[in-house]
Length: 590
Image 1 (tube, rainbow, N blue to C red):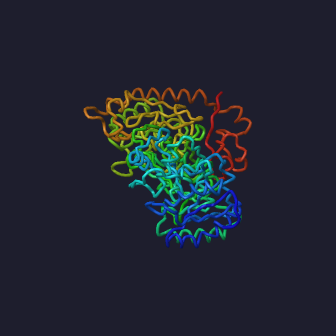
Image 2 (image 1 turned 90 degrees about the vertical axis):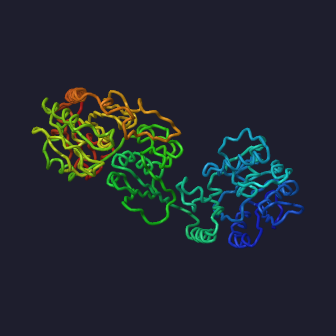
Image 3 (image 1 turned 30 degrees about the vertical axis):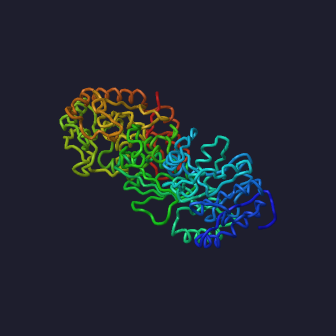
């Protein structure tokens, strides 16, 4: 027992299984008790107790606090304690009950609902989420009443031994002032996905719920701590799966970049995507088309579709928000700062060459994407043809973009005018990025080219049907979705589509509402042409073929060569210093 002190580390060793566990963990308790200047008290039975399971022996703490100790740190026997763990007595103030809120990581509200009913107790202050794990806690003599069992013990279907009963006692007594322990002092497997940290980077690893794997995991972790101490430096290993189509993968880029640069800076971040080349500009991430080998400290699945089969969609299918915001909410539980929401994309010289192999001049192009998709995204071919012919007749060079991927995702066979350029099926994804970066104006109804344009400063004419423009116009210029962009429509489909949150219809209208046709929503072709003319006038008013900057640099078009790219004033800051990036033209106001 050691010398008597006012502090004690208390645990329970009852039964053959826990005796086997204690053989592995006793040395950790010995070292930690010495560090805390505390006794070790092992509870194996309580005189006169009539408890339904060995866990209830924990209520022997009442007598210990009443007669012997002023402070107790209770720690389950199925834990290991790292040698650099601070004293829990120093962390938790003496007037507080220190405990870990398991409800933040795993829903346990059903336990509280049940015990309120079974014991007919009113828990006024409960927020519907909190649930405390009683495998590690710190208490003082003034808290001894928590451990005095005055009720008849009643069976609970969702009791977790004595744990829910103790929760009831804590939640129903306002005088029990709580101090919330960080999960690193009671690290269980339920924390693995949410924290993004290896359990080895926690002070106290608690193997509750690990069942038959307990001994295997514990032995492996003990060995790792022996090898990694006393520094205990760990890199997190994070896995991100970017799912969905091209537009979905592009919309995920700001969130992946933010996670890599801000949330998991200097950690190992793996990204799996069928479109992994969209992220190769993000420093340090590891890209793959297949699931990488090994264990991960956190796994994230990204999808911009607000559908009931996505994680966030299971609980919030009725939330309508921007694609980038949806990914960040579903992944991080919050939206990104406005300055971090803009999509970034890069390309190399060979991608620009794909474009110039088709036509040498790119910066006068008006790109039109007559796409094929859902019913609400597939406009009549005559509609697109009129826009193209009218613009061509006014002297605009049209660049028709798109790809025949499948019957469901394709491009219409519109006729390309003689003074225009047909890029259909001729460009890679990076080649299309290069083209969009140089083109003057983009006309589209599809998220993929729209989000690509979000990485640059072109003018955008969006014809929205299946989604409200506020949900897909790209964030640019510090979070402004309408920067050099316009959305044209007679009305949005949402005005005619009855939305019932309980129906889980999601945010995307793939079919026209019953009794309505697409013509009711499409703007007149003449209005699209007029907006292109308006944007072209704006472009010409801000474009100077030779301005002061160009004169100072002695070159037309403000293109950089490798020798001065690091100090280039004309390349966007995120692309400076890259010896492979192509500097796009930048135009300054007269």
